[in-house]
Image 1 (cartoon, rainbow, N blue to C red):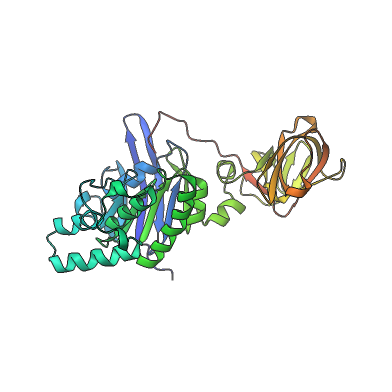
Image 2 (image 1 turned 30 degrees about the horizontal axis):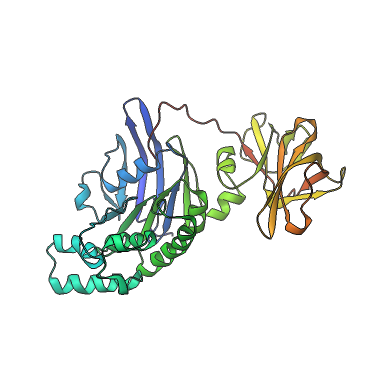
Amino acid sequence: MSPAPLLSIRNLRHRYGETTALDDVSIDIGENEFFALLGPSGCGKTTLLRAIAGFEHPHEGEIFLDGRSLLDVPANRRPINLMFQSYALFPHMSVERNIAYGLESEGLPRAEVRARVEEVIETVGLGSFARRRPTALSGGQRQRVALARAIVKRPRLLLLDEPLSALDRQVRAEMQLELKRLQHEVGLTFVVVTHDQEEAMSMADRIAVLDHGRVRQVDAPSQLYANPADLFVAAFIGTSTRFAGTLTATGIDTAFGAVPGDHSGAVGEPGALVVRPEDVHLGPVGSGRVDGVVIDTTFHGGASSVRLELDGGLGVLTGTVHADRLPARGERLGADWSAERARIVAVEPAPTAQGAVSG
């Protein structure tokens, strides 16, 4: 029997006037899990985070923490901390004073505050910066101060709203690893909101992909990539080529013939064959299922991407090749792919958008 989830969200619905922000959202999040809410702008992920934190009261549904309903618990009484995108540090206070502020506000004994602040400062690697003010720190260091301030209160759940968006690319990559390390070290459940799929895939144990207020799929990053539940997830997660077709009992019928495979859609309904770049094999014309002409190449170091405009108006296929075998633009090639790794997905219609929703 699996353990009960730490956080359980059941049939949550929320609207802003005529705009549906959350549409029957149900998610379970486990103890000590690093969980990501991922989706494009307007998908409802920030609204969901605010509902968990207590800043929005959903119109329908329930939110349970440790089996206890949170809906009647004010935001300031929930054992949850929210780390804001802006960090919201006090510029006139030192690092240690910023971190201690919440504990002091609760009236904890001075000795306990000092001990907990010193412990968390060392955990986030800011021991030599304790007396500095935020203006004297780098963006990555300020992010660590905000994180330390959030975890020093020892919440049951830490919510992070786009925590790395203010950092440059290199620092962001470093902090992705740092956040994951800290999450394991302090033993907290993290729920992070992001629109950056690379960020979610690199940090999270599991990810909920949202679209128009609905949960499209909840899964581990590797499963989202390898086994997308529908066309939206396949298109949103990673790079792929999608070939339209009609679902059959044994696979899918496409413009280049029948392709066998499993799927969860209904026979006769629209579907798509999803092919990832690393599964594409390029060779001489006539050597694969399709032929085309190279229209673009992009160098990425050891591996590079090739975009092939396919004959017969079949679209553009993206493949990955070793950098030393990069074909020339205008070269004609044949293309095939690993049949066992291609995926057939149903084309799920997106809910009708009724207005823009933040997050």
